[in-house]
Length: 453
Picture 1 (cartoon, one colour):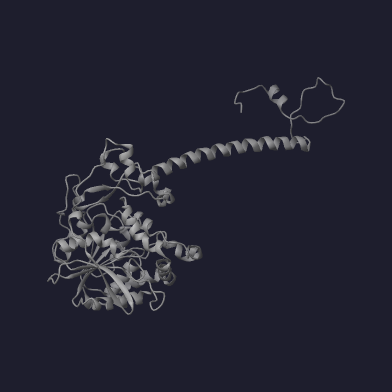
Picture 2 (spheres, one colour):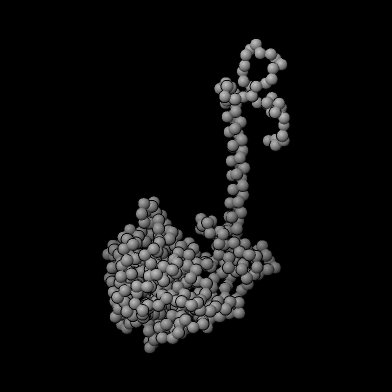
């Protein structure tokens, strides 16, 4: 297509001319095509105009395709390594297999771009083939730090049967202890596995700690009958579970996350004699709390479109915080939904019975009467919940309930982002110590200090 400028006369010669008087002089000036032109000339103009539009659209598509390919390359080829927060505030780089899930979250790309320096590169929040880094940079290695978690023994996997439903749970191997038993309960689409590293530190410090898989999640049974997946069914079953595993003294309840984490709060409010302390980790509290995706799609008019689809539990965890999410953890949390339909059906049964606003009100009212020492422990970089909602919610609660923002970068799942700092704060709280004091968990690369809450 020519872009040069031509004279009006030359331009006119190229355009279809109106059919005029047959007796007109042959030397008369040519007339431009316009409203008076015949259908054939109009069609020619429309064809030319359509061709021009098609050219513009084709060029735009080529640009978008190139941009899309660039995005795919950035997310899929894993030029950047992945990391996670470790003990001492350090981060470690580990290889992860490639996955296409992140490509669905291109809106997060602006959050994922990192400066090309050894320090900020280690905070790349993407999935991918970590081996690509060494293949493309054979003489350069991502920064690596010793992971103290590798030196700590894993908690034991155990099972218990309650009313015909098998519960799977992790438990530390410390034997009888004068210290209180700590029970960790996870949120929706998660599992007790999320507290695996947390239990390692509790075990190191001599605590009998338990992390359950709620029925319908993780490695626990996913019954299709005999369990109705209602809030009441969960809270009553948890009381029976504690009796079954012979926990007969008040516990420290650590509960986290959406819906099931809120059921944990309801359990504490309904069974105050069974609770010594309550710790709430990043759970919806305020009346303005919203359900994030994919949970929100199971409510309202979108409900019929969401049911029947495999929930993306792995991405739900990965999108909740500021750090990369290890692909191994991604696979473990997604595995129950890929194995068969039982986990999906159990999840959908909960969402089908859920009245979100009613649950928020019920949690708020029940905790107004709860007088046991309680701590809301918050990861301030939560991508799903705002700490301002928790602060507003706290205004109507007893003075025995406190809020503390973790003095480090933690997201919706503090148990994944910085388990040692979380454990240190919880232990200080249950021992009556100053949990707001500067943390002992430090490193040369990152000094954290307590905020003023």
